[in-house]
Length: 97
Image (cartoon, rainbow, N blue to C red; front, side):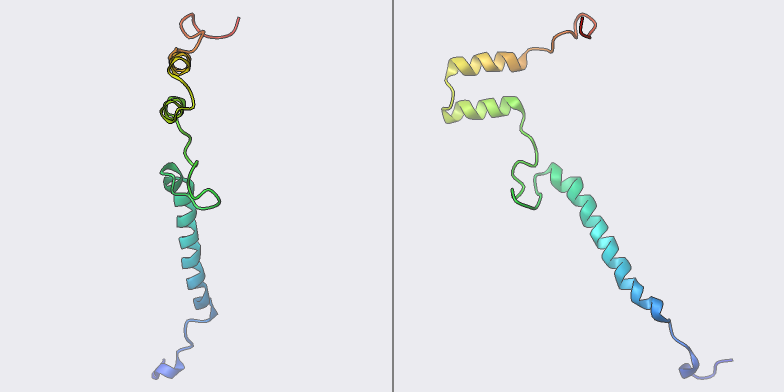
């Protein structure tokens, strides 16, 4: 029977693994957030600073190009009509013939 506190052998060397476990948990949480939530909102890290992490919709790109003056009104309307039309083959049952 232990009567003195000095007789207790202590937690042992495994106590050093507890900080490593918490570091692994933190790394795992950051990795999951980086691959899911931050990528969706364009808050990624790295060379681009998050710009370009989320692809723009083609109609948004077309509208931006028209607003910047890269294309004229006629070209904008023609490209918008092509982008807005439904995909071919879906009305006839789909598939290539």
